[in-house]
Amino acid sequence: AIAALVRGLPATVPWNGRELSMVYVEDMAEGICKALSAEVVSPRIFTTPGFYATHDDIVLELRRHFPGGDIHIEGAPRLAPTEVASKPKFPRYDASVARQALGWECSTSLRQGIAKIIEYHVRQRDMAAV
Image 1 (cartoon, rainbow, N blue to C red):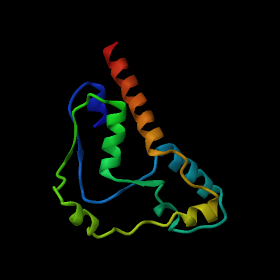
Image 2 (image 1 turned 135 degrees about the vertical axis):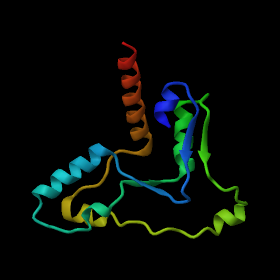
Image 3 (image 1 turned 180 degrees about the horizontal axis):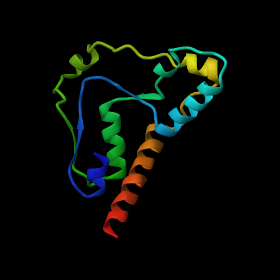
Image 4 (image 1 turned 45 degrees about the vertical axis):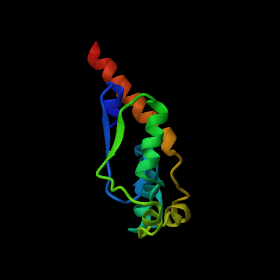
């Protein structure tokens, strides 16, 4: 979606009905380095998300960066407010293992991460134009 918006094209955010568990690459790389040097070994350390975001959160942040952009969520059902409130909640991962075992947690917010991804795609677009 971001690459399309940077090029001035319409963007679609696919909807799967769940919150998205997100970790940015730089944060995960830091966590992996800490895990490699840690004495504590647990298979659960990297089932931890950085943060949760809904599809609406992502679209709102994209609209903040691309106010005139054609952005929509594909496949989202049209639910009445009572249906949204009664939707089942999905289980969330527990980030406490990584915090306790490694002293690690993600530091990149949705806003910061989307800004980094936009910068990347702008550089790619500009290099392709040369």
